[in-house]
Figure 1 (cartoon, rainbow, N blue to C red):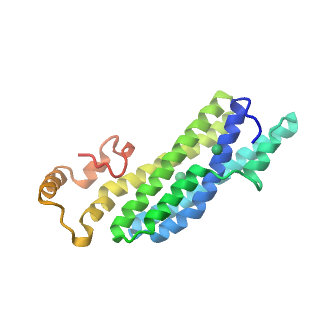
Figure 2 (figure 1 turned 135 degrees about the vertical axis):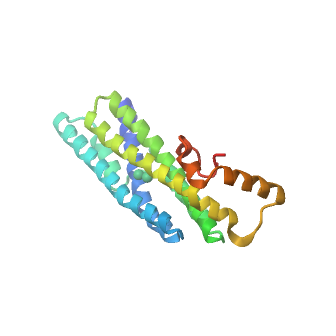
Figure 3 (figure 1 turned 180 degrees about the vertical axis):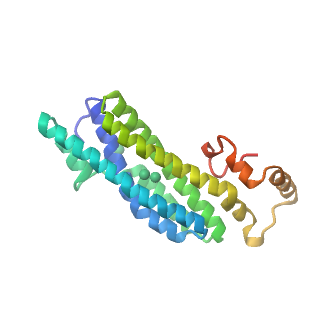
Length: 223
Ligand code: ZN
Ligand code: FE
Ligand code: FE
């Protein structure tokens, strides 16, 4: 890519990355929804697919705004626009890697509930990556005084946080617990006793409704 000389260029680079991320996620989510067993999880993933398509549209909107600007100012954004939205756009390797990791674990032989837990973990990694990317892009847009761009990016950022939170609640309230007892394997006596104690103290829905619980990884159960 051409030399990045300022924050505007860096924003363009980040948008290019996010566009590719959303495209890849649109491809990956139906596969994950298909692999999921829990109906709520399936529904959540399908709903996020719908939302993700809207997020891609927001990036298209930003593209139109930048295009207009490029025409009126004859600035050098056309190369970026071609890369971001045309062929030869750079693939977001971060998302590619996260999706690949998800596919790898899903290919393992697993109990359905364990697979559901693994799917949630993979999706949350992707959400966190997106949260990071959109957070950065929004901050740049704000700094550059691109208020409409900032607004669009903030809307998507909020949705990514919500998706992460929904997955977290699902994991903490249900899927992790199902995975814990699936396959009929008993935990070792010491941990089983400990778990039982903590489980009765913190009922699942209590655990998830605790403030800040959503910020924790799905596998780290609040105690
Ligand atoms: Zn990049
Ligand atoms: Fe997204
Ligand atoms: Fe997302």
